[in-house]
Image (cartoon, rainbow, N blue to C red; front, side, top):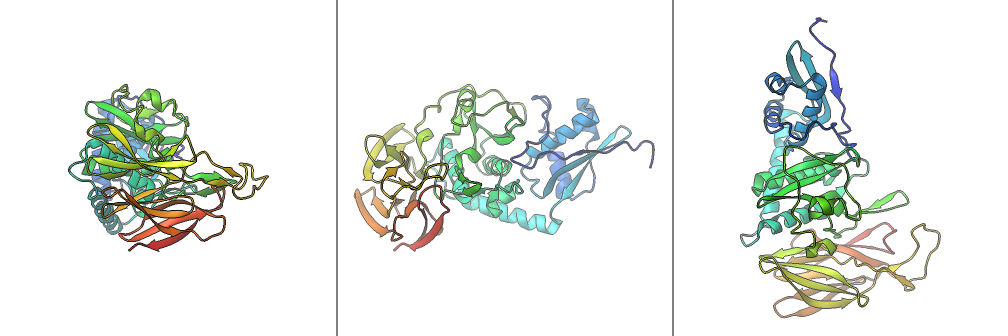
Length: 419
C-alpha cells in the first residue's frame, strides 16, 4: 500500500437512531450548505469516491474534523436516503474523499425518489391557499404523526422509512419534515441534534424568527412492560413551535442541542402559550379554521372547539360526556373492575370528510356538522368493557378505530365504512 495512503477513518456514527446521535458536533458556524450539495451530486451518480478536497482545505479541517463534518452534511441532506449511516473518509496526501455505502441500486434509488415525491405532492395537496405558514407547518406535523410510527427496533432512520415504510426513529421524522418544508412549502427548515439526549428534531423559520418542532416526541406512543403501542389518532402538540426557553422546559425537556448549520437562537416566544400545546387530538384544518378536542376539566367530558388562525380566537362548539376507564395500575400489579377508576385525559381523535367532523368517545363514533350544529351517533363498540382509544380515516370512506381495555393493553382495530 502506498505510503501516501493514510489510515482510513470511519464515521460509524450512532447516526443510527435513537440516533445515538450521530456525528460529534463541529463548530456551530461550520458550513454545511456548500458540502451537502457536493455529497448529494456525487451520491446521485453513485460515485464510489466523492472528492471534497477543496472544501476540506478551505476550512482547514483535519481528517478527524472532516469526518465529523461529513456526518453533519449527511444530516443536512434528506435526499441521501439511499446511503447507509456508515461513512468513510479517506485522505491521500492532501486530498480528501468520501466513500458511501449505498443501500439501493441506481434504479432502486430513482424509483424510491419517485415514490417519495409523489407522496409529498399528495401530502401538500391537502394544504389550501387560505392556510398561513403556521397551518402548513401544523398540517405536515400532524400528517407525519398520524401516518408513521416510531421504530423501537431502531433500524429505520431516513425519510424513505418515514414516508414510505411508515416506521422510523427521530432522524427519519426530522429528515422527512425538512424535505417537505424546504422543497414543497418554501419554508426554511434544518435539523437539530443532541448527543446528550441521543435525539434529533427540527428548527423552522417563520417570518424573521426560528422555532423548535419535535415530531418524534409529539408522536406519543404508549410503552408498557417493554411493549409499545402506537396510539392510533393520538397527536400531541406540546413540542410544536417552541422557543429555546420552552424547549428546555417541556414535560420531556430538551438538553445540550446543536443546530446543523449557522442559525440564530430561538428567542421569540410568540407561540409558547398557543392553544395547541394542550391539544392531543389531530388539529383538522379547513381553510382558516382548525378543529380540535380538549379535555373539559370541570367534568368528565371533552370539548370540540374551533380556532380561527387569522383572528386568533377559539370557540367551543359541542361538549361530549365521556370517560376512559383504567383497568390496572402502571405496574400491572392490580386489575380494577371496569367503571371504578377513569383517566383524567382523553383519547378523542378527529377526522373530516365532506364538511363533517367525525370523532370518537370511549364507546361511540359520531359525526358533527358545523353548518347545522347537529351531532349523530354512527357506531357503538360492542366489545364488552373495551374502549375506543382513537380513530383515523384510511380512505375517503373508511374509518379505522383502535380499541383496548385501557392504554396498557395492545390495540385491536376495526374498519368502518361510512355512508
